[in-house]
Each structure stands twice: as structure tokens, then as C-alpha cells.
Length: 458
Image 1: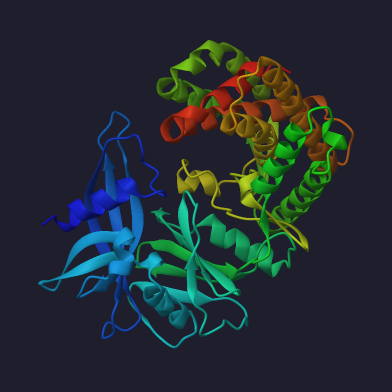
Image 2 (image 1 turned 90 degrees about the vertical axis):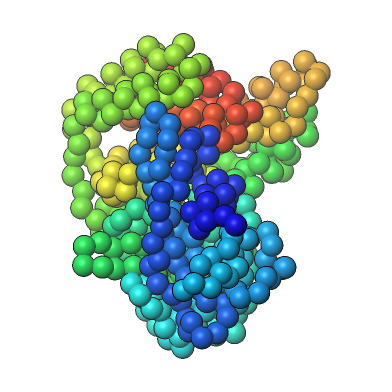
């Protein structure tokens, strides 16, 4: 029988949301933060915080949250979420990932409603006077890559954070501020789960408005590209699925959110030379992971060098990891989601004020990514079709980037300094994409590499 550490390691390395794929890992410990709901009724729901140590040259460690549904007898319906055998006070029970279990998630809902309690260091915090549906059944979302989200009926959704860093999670603190500011561009925050001790706070999950009828921004953009590719003789603005209007509305939404964040969180300036130095260091580290970047390194360093000459850069609270997949289109307009920031960065760095151009660059890279991702997923042998798709991809990306920038800035073009900022942050984002694809989707690595090859010094 595998030990608890072995069981956790076997489960983590195969989980979609585990961020250490492609690295040598070892689960070196865990601690039980507490229980959700009454321990007298099955399943017992225990929240485990798992320490993962990396055994590769990069080293380091991370903490991951695994909420466990513990049953005395096997539950065949949960075989796909089986974590392993678990020692409960000398009795071995069956442990399953609790987000897959409606009975376990019902205990979360009842605790938010005040009809059940959390034990140990767990605390459930409610915001405002929103009335939750007490009998709502849970449904686990599929496809998430960093966390796990569970909808309660058509009313609310609980995002369970998987990778945990001590301190306040910006996804919660940012949503709290924007909810209080009555922003129309985020889902309203209903509450969160935290673990508190004398010396640390861990944000574990957040409960927010479920945008049931929303459509994923990436999916809408990809559909637009497919429509364009299907109409061989039409330009992007002539196809029924033209996305430029939506791109403009996204630019307006981001501008409004940035204004609200600037008013609600500390802002200031950062030396451009230090920002450029950090970007250059990330490039150096990325070349070790993606050797193909070495051919472009000198040109990218020159791009960052131009950024270094801009003096002081205005900084504020930003999204930090914005792309089309972090947007939802509703009947009331665009919503931005997932304000955690770039997952690969330490929490302290994600909480620092940053340039709003980071978010702009993330969206621009996403507009560039969509048409090439469609082409990559639908390979074509006819060289004439390949060339035509290349032209259409460039046209689609350029049209939507222009519409987005025009709406965000309120001008027809960028100033010199804005152009330098965009070039640097877009290059840094593409470098990050190269590392991500190399570790997670190697067959997609040519997409950001090709983008970097197209980049010039402004």
C-alpha cells in the first residue's frame, strides 16, 4: 500500500492543474489545515496542504492544496478522482479529490450559508448580503489549467486555488475592491475561504457570481478565425464573424478596470532600467529552457534596452496575466476574470504595482496567438492554402490589435514611448509563452517562436 506522500505525489503529477510538469518533483510533506462540515457524516472533508520539492537544477518548492473527501468504503463513481488510501487516526479510508464529489462540495456550500462549521484553521468569509441557493448541486468545470472551479446551481461558483502562496491572493483582494466599486467588468465577489494562524494567512478559495450565460473570449475569437479561414476570398472585415468590434469593447473594458484599480490601490513609478533588467534576466533564464531563443536574444535585449531609456514608468495594480482566455462575453458586456497574476511569479512580485502595459501586451499577444493556434490545430498540406492562411492570420491579428489599442488609448496611434513599452512587454510575454509551451505543449512552441522571429526593434 502506498504511503500518503506517495499517493499525493502520484495524484499531483497527473493533475491538469499541477504546474511542475516536465520537472523532477518529490512530495516532501503535507499538513492538514482543518475540516469542512461535520466529521460525523460522510464524507469527512479534510483540506491538505502539500509540499512539493523540485529535484531538478532549478530547485525550489511549492505548496498545493488538495481538499479530500474521505470515505470508509470505496466510491466507484469517484474512481477518476482517487488520491489513495488515507490514514485517519489509525484507520485506512479511501481519499478522493473533493472537488469531484457533490456530497463534499455541499459541505462547502452549507458552511458559507452558516449551516455547517469549519474546524481547525479554516475560516469561511462572506461578503455583502447575497442570498445563496441552499439546495444547489455542484458541477465541476472541465478544462481549467491552474485551479478547480465548482458551480453551485446557476447562482455561484467556487474557485479552489491549487497552488498556494502564503499571503493574500490578489484574485480575492482585487475582486473585493472592484465589487465594492460596483465595476461592471468583473463577476461579483460573494466570499472566500482562508486558513489563518498567528504568523500567516493562506487564501484557499473564492466564491463569486456565476456568469452562466457567458461565452469564453478565446472561443469567440477562435470561431472568428475559423470563419475567416473558411471564406477564402474575403478579408477579415467582410466575414460575418469579424471580431474587431469585440476587440474594441475589450479595450474599453480594460481601460475602465485600470482606472478603478488606480483609484483603489497604491500606485507610483518604477525605474525603467530596473524593469528592463528584470526582463533581460528572464530572457537569459528562458534560453536555458528553450535554446531556440538564443538566435533572437541580441535583438530582444536591444528591445529591452530601449525600454531602459524611458526613465520612470507609472505602475499600479493590474491584472497581471491577461489574455482572451481570461475574458468572458456576457449580454451586459465583457468581464475580466482570474486576477491572480502570472502563476510562475512569486506572490510578493504579483502584488507589486506593475505597468498597465503588461495587460495590454497580454491581450495583443492573444490576438496574435488565436489565428496561428487555429492553423496549428488544422494542418494543411496545400502550399497555396498555407500561404493564404498566413496572410489572413496576419490580417486578422493586425485588425483586432489596432481596434483594441484604439479603444484602450482613445487615440489613432501610439506615442514613441508607448510603442517602446508595448514592444518590450509583448516580447517579454512571448518569451514566457515559449517557456510555457516547451514545458506543457511542445507542439505549440513554434507559435511564440515565430512571433519572436517577426518582432523588430521599434
